[in-house]
Amino acid sequence: MLNMKTSAYRKYDTGFTSHTFVQYGSDGHVYCVAGSPTRFNCVIKLNIDSGQVPFTISYLTDNTSHHCAVIRCRVVGLRG
Image (tube, rainbow, N blue to C red; front, side, top):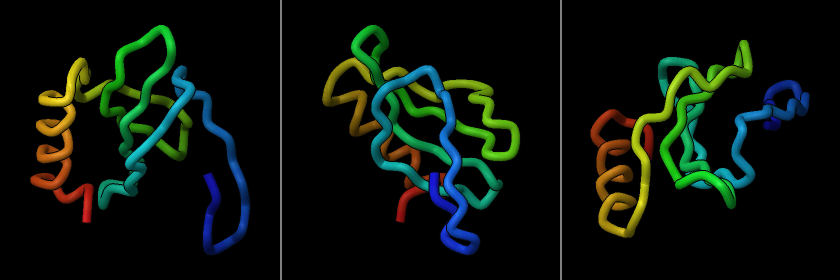
């Protein structure tokens, strides 16, 4: 992750290999859709201070679930 103010770069180990729809939340966490070859896609919450992923929000197993997760992100203000 690149800090645009300081140009500092930090890599986070989330346990997933792909991260899409990355959004910075007003609560200071980063939210994104994450997945890997061995795990279903899900929406995760990343604590950028500790680097921990405290929990996953929703497992995404098909296109219908994916659309529901994106709508949920918009409701809580994580997607513009």
